[in-house]
View 1 (tube, each protein chain N blue to C red):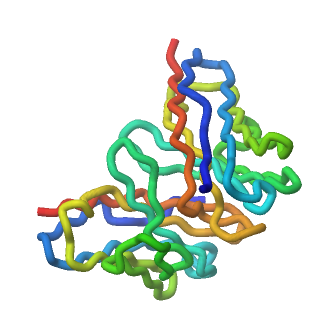
View 2 (cartoon, each protein chain N blue to C red):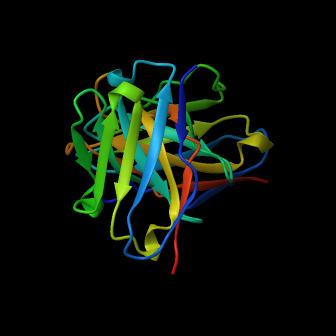
Length: 110
Length: 122
């Protein structure tokens, strides 16, 4: 099972919006609505920001949103804040009943 | 509140085995699958497998098959990860993480253990 494809890095200025893509195939991202996004700050455990493509857990800012088109899922962060600077990972359920993560994207807030 | 508390850091020599435990509380243990995920220093998240906490069924990532064993003890709501034939490439933080959604496998939800650092060094 190959990792999902994410850009290695993205950046944006405070107040701007950014989008991180996560590309898989029909056996994972394209085949299921079980795509999650995680935020990880250095030395911390990951925190789920989006689950089931577009659902936001309670307590997560509505500046975070998720979507999917075909085999690509996306995480959009609007109104960028300094605290959003972190690593972001996508994850999907697969046809083999396994889970696969993306390689991770480092978000820099300029 | 939901908590997953893992055992402490371990140091092992190459070729040895290690077992990491994950004590769950605050929810119905048998109602959720548990994933094991690892993260090597400076690297991304890597899914290792899951265990069905209700019946003990497992599904391992192909990369670890033959070398990994996941078990659980429902009487003490604890899951275990055993990894054998360790090499330096297994040096990583190992996390247990509850699957989102009851009674089905899937990506982790917001409940992760604190992580256990396993260092493999001669």
